[in-house]
Length: 219
Image (tube, rainbow, N blue to C red; front, side):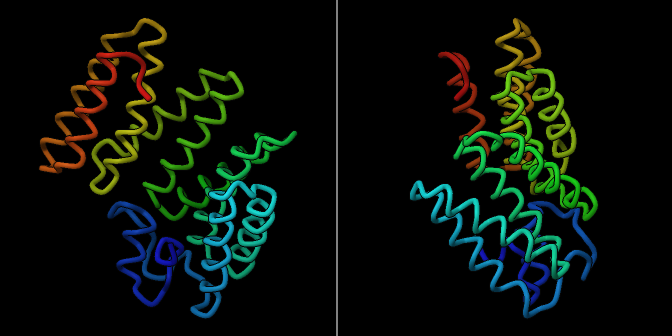
């Protein structure tokens, strides 16, 4: 959890953890003072623990403080992660205005991630935005975010998980609208991607997706 927030002590490992790909920020871009990241990481992880326990108000309040702290010290990688977590907490809490606030947090994460060329994190932000849009009944907006996420990660090493998730959600939408052939193509692409990467875990996900689709809606 700490490494995902961009600990500067091991920059190369952090870049991989933060981006999930080789497309990343420069050596020091987006990483604030070395003594500023740890408190943010600890508090952000604690907020996530509150959310897991169902303490959504505490999670939201703590994660908002973490985001403000990360941006305040110029730790933009940590800001991406905390903004994504905040969007998730708000989406789970669903108090009045929370979906709009979640959308704003995810958009902030997307803005920073794209500026820093954090491909995987940008895709995660789009996946969150798609889920929010779907919840609000904005199907076209959801599909646009999923298509953008899939396009950005399709041939990006290290972003296979993000591509597969975006593709699964797109295929579900295609099936629902009667575009079975388009969904078939995505399933085939998922299988081909897994085979090309020689990735057993990815192959299992692709096959589970195909089996779930054959038996009913994709979960």
